[in-house]
Each structure stands twice: as C-alpha cells, then as structure tokens.
Image 1 (cartoon, rainbow, N blue to C red):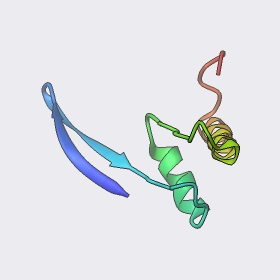
Image 2 (cartoon, rainbow, N blue to C red):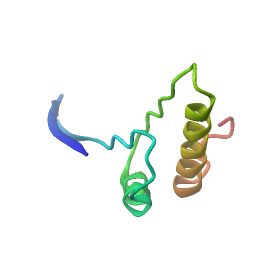
Image 3 (cartoon, rainbow, N blue to C red):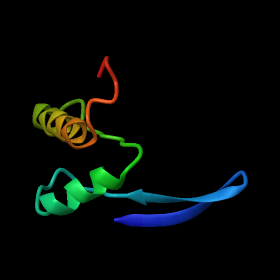
Image 4 (cartoon, rainbow, N blue to C red):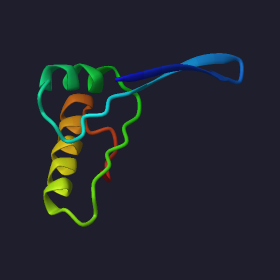
Length: 73
C-alpha cells in the first residue's frame, strides 16, 4: 500500500495505491480498500490470459462492492 497527499487546486487529496500484484493473500484488506476507494485502475498483461482473468475477477469485485454505478460497465 502506497499513500501520498497531493495538492489539488484549493484542497489536498490523498492518493492510495494498493498493489496486489495478482496475489489474493489479504481479501478482507482488498474489500476494505475497494469500499473506501473512489477510482480504480485494474491492469493486466496482454500476453497472459490468466492475468486478464484475474483483472476481470477484480472488476466484478469492484462492481459487487461499489454497486453497478455505470449502466454500460
């Protein structure tokens, strides 16, 4: 987990990055991070089908926890 406070116009924001590296050792921590997160970036290796499968699993988890906020997701 990486965290940094950044100035943004007239306020400060906290950027937190949870680097899972595809490892599912702490699923509770991941769920908490998703529940409190405002934006998500899910990356995968284009030459690794299992990497894409993990990314899709994470996408479904974000939608499950945050709710389907987009009708075209």
